[in-house]
Image (cartoon, rainbow, N blue to C red; front, side, top):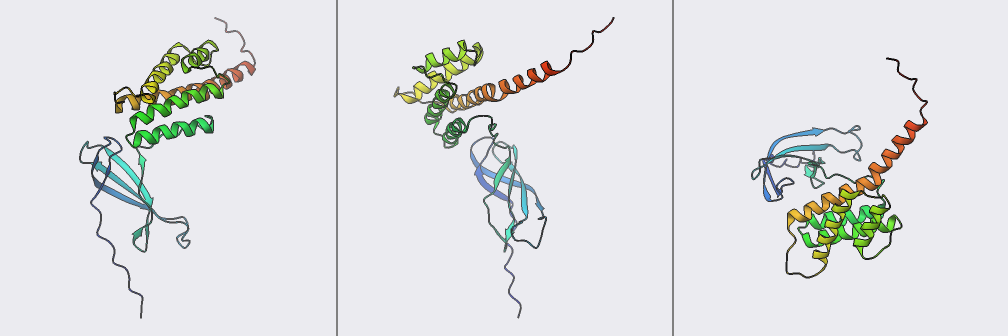
Length: 221
C-alpha cells in the first residue's frame, strides 16, 4: 500500500509583514512566484528556491523575497527580502567598526532611534581610535582627523553633526530622536566609513597605477 501524499497547502495570495519601503506592517499582495530547481534534484542538500514578487497595499511599492522551497510541502525557511536589499559595508572597513555600525542599524530597525545615534557616535570614536587619534573629547578628535587630512571640511562638518546628535541621545534632555534624524545619522556614518576606508584607498591605488605607467609621448598639433 503506497504512502499517503500530504495535501499541498492552498496557494498564497498575500503575506502580512513590515514593508521594507514604508516601514509599516501591511498586507503584501503576491503578484507572482518562480521556483528555481536545484542543480542536483536527487540531493536533499540542494533545495529549490522560491522567489516571490510582492506589492505593498499601503505604499504600492514592489519587493522581492526568496526562501528555500518545499520539504514535504512545508516551507523550511523564513522568506528573506532580496529587493530592496540591505547594503553591506565593504570588508575594507575594519571588522570592529562594521560591528558597531551594524548594531546601530539593528537599533534603527527595532525603532530604537536614540540607541541608533548613540551607536553611530561610538562608530565615530572607533574611527579615530583605529587611525591612532585618541584625543578627547570627540569634538577634538574630529578636529584632529581634519588637520591630519583623514577627512576634509565637509566630512568634518558631517562628523561633528553626528557627534552632537549622539550627545543628545547619550544624555537625558527630554527630547526624542526622530526617525528621520536617526536615518540620516546612519547614512552619514556609512558615507564616512566609505570615504575613509574604501574611496581614499581606491584613489591611492588609482594614483599609484597611473604614476607607474610610462609617460605618453607629447601630442603634436
